[in-house]
Image 1: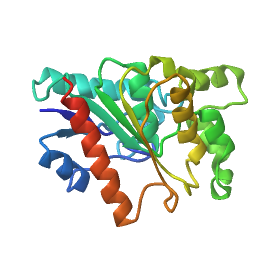
Image 2: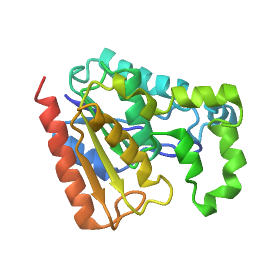
Image 3: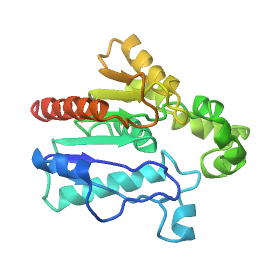
Image 4: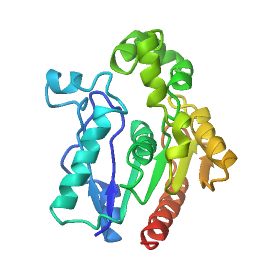
Amino acid sequence: VPLIVNPHGGPQGVRDEWGFNPEDQLFASRGYATLHVNFRISGGYGKEFQQSGYKQIGRKAMDDVEDGVKYVIEQGWIDKNKIAIYGGSHGGYATLMGLIKTPDLYACGVDYVGVSNIFTFFESFPEYWKPYKEMVKQIWYDLDNPEEAKIAKEVSPVFHIDKIKKPLFVVQGANDPRVNINESDQIVKAMRAKGVEVPYMVKYDEGHGFRKEPSRIELYKYMMGFFAENFNKK
């Protein structure tokens, strides 16, 4: 069956847990499997596991996602030619990095309120996040450190759009205080400037993830159409 790889948000201290998931049920109703990977830096597996992902966002954390995909391919459970990656917040960032890092692994991707540029993401922190800035520098990357700033550029998708070869759908709430709309605007503008068609859904009355039912219904309607269109190309 086709597969939707769904990296979680956060990423630090957050994890996917066993239980009912309405998104997974929606995907299953269309005949798609869903893969959730609790990559290093996820919570709930102890301090060592979480800290092993510090300074590895976009790097070894993505390797873990790829290893999960390779595992289900090896089990013979899914069609390796029909794999999509989709996520929100850090999951949106992971979608972009997945399309860049392993462009042949995925048929398409959906970036939902995702970070595209670590530098502008840090600059746009909301006021209530600013007390945590030093902590975030220890977990993500310290941009005041030249070596770490170099790594941050290597794992900021907006600087590597030439590596994106598969269709991308971008979704953003204009009032998002956590991941500013500039993050999505940057990736869409950069790709369109290269002549790449990128569908872009913006809701001007939504924030970090759509809360209103009409917005959510429209999002899933278009997202399911996007998956179906790209899976059927194979």
